[in-house]
View: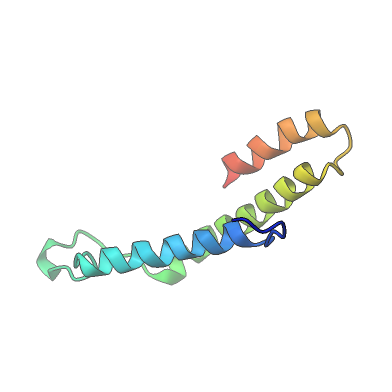
Length: 92
């Protein structure tokens, strides 16, 4: 925190660490071990694939737009960032 150098991917790495720790906590609580008679329905990963691809694409686009907005390379930066950042966030 005291260094002048910044790691560009520190926020995405923190997000991945948050996902890993959340998975670990949920696993420790036993949420992935359910009784078969209490399960209402299941969904395969194949059925979720289109939505997972959409979330990944929207997240990458949102991070790209944020990078462009922070660096100030967008044309008419205030107006463009005011439209693109919330739009990509809502898509995510």
